[in-house]
Image 1 (tube, rainbow, N blue to C red):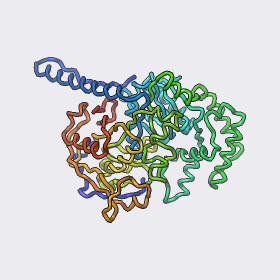
Image 2: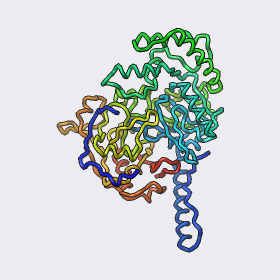
Image 3: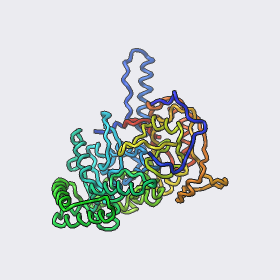
Image 4: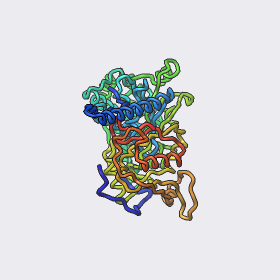
Length: 491
């Protein structure tokens, strides 16, 4: 998508809290050249050196990662975590999800360029030697999981024996999704803007201790009673929710079939993970869903998700000790997007936001909703880095900015009286009153999607990357310049 025929507002409008509306080729293989002349020999040799240099850098970066590493989102989700997980997965034995549910939407591409949209299955599934673990902190909608598995299998991706589901994970039922919609309707103008996938209601069932876990499917004699408690609770809370004894019987029969199919997947993943890490010395990659600014504690509450997508969620969602967790990579888009309601300090409500949306194809993987767009918010990014202790960052979608004359960075927050706010505040009223201080950098006005060496990026693009590093204090080791597997620069 080119922006060359369009331009950004010189003074874009910004608003806070506006409602929304198998195998990875690590080497970049240059085209083959027929040696018709010495000059062409020189071009081919130059490209070969470029490819070798990129390959060496990529292997150095990946080999330096710790035994247990993680990929987490820095913003409000949709940063492109799945692509990095897919790329790194071939160097890890296990890829695991630790929180969230089918509200996560990770888009990845195989070596032939075929697109896969994953919601529950970890993004390492395209790497045939990788075991994928759905941990105890995840809420699992079985119809959705089986649909995802069937889709993968039909496209030649083997899942048999490669997906393990925690016996402690919570089951998310269809009625949770219905309750999610009723809850949003009840909130009216104060709606959260959830995916309506039932995530919040399912976590609510877990926290009030009447939820049903995957392991309960091994005891079908007690499932009807437990399910009836859940349905009765929902009916008592929402007048629009109705259920009958016949509905209960039908649901139990459905889950008897699901239980039989799921049995080969059910695992004590706490034991599996700890045995893999400490006894078998396996390498583990944790894939975060959603992102830090949607964290139930640290995000823009109440406009957040219902789990902990930050570093702490790894331990509680997989049952592994903090001492086991090593390098964490934060994934951050070169600009900022958000789906749903809630504060968004650097949101651009003018044509500039529309340009970013079109160029970046910013529409939700899970919901298809158009994403709200704006400039990169470095205050929020510093906050995210502080909470998670990132060892490095993956800056994604840098190519989307390629046609812009100039690019802005949100570098500071100030109150109306000019007082500087040093960190991302938890007070939404304060957030609404803040003014964002911007720094303007020159654009590079050239296509960077075929570049694989950092030194070959335009100087203005390098300046943008290095200014982010300087202001955040965390190195950027990976730079995304397109959706494909090979469209990644190792810095």
